[in-house]
Length: 334
Ligand code: TRP
Ligand code: SF4
Image (cartoon, rainbow, N blue to C red; front, side, top):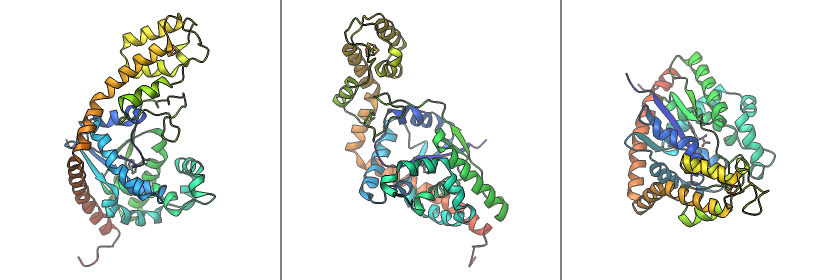
């Protein structure tokens, strides 16, 4: 049986952190063996809220791919490509824009939340491009025949929007498109070093896959611990401590048990506890850091992965687009 096709991707707006790693990257690394995987570097989508910072987007295309390869995404198994190099997507976005109303986009919960967060950029009135990015995302998915989209809950309204567009298209022009399904990540979101529910660049509470040993140590030493603990022999509560929370991600089960027990009994100093965590985190991320250093020294590898991936995706998109234009009676001169 043919493998089903996965389509997923990220906006290239910054380096990836351990929240991304445990949230989506681990899944992608696993799924690339079971599915035919396409991963797009969504530079066009990144521009919808970074149109005034083109150099930032460009720089992060490369960074994103380095992060992908460093954490185990294998270009032999996953096709990684640049969204803007597939102009069929832009073309299809125009056709899809007839199949979706402005009111529907304005009601999209993900878009709504993001607009509220981007008041600085958009002021009181959002751009046409940003409001319409779910339409362009529907084009990303369908132009490559994506059947499964592994993503977090925040992407659910976008996939639903895509499904609606597909149904509408097929009902008008004929059954050409596949309705994609979301593959919801069961991994729970990783909290920030400060205890914030979300880890993110703007919050300054993230550990990046690319952080140096010194940076990791420094960040962990500043993590929020049980605030009621002042002296080493004060009885602690590890369940309200971010250090204990991260021990569960990076330390062995045995160590975690010991951390909790000793903390509760007031037999463990926070400084030592953090140092132990820093050491384990550094070890955990070491293979990724080494791979990253290698890739940084060999930019031609990244170039080749992107070139080959993009060429493959482009061919696929051309095939889909031909079918779409036939269905829409736009196949002139044939
Ligand atoms: N919306 C995704 C993000 O915020 C990026 C993205 C663009 C995407 N096109 C996609 C994800 C298609 C899955 C499928 O990072
Ligand atoms: Fe947190 Fe460790 Fe201090 Fe307990 S001993 S409060 S787990 S840092």
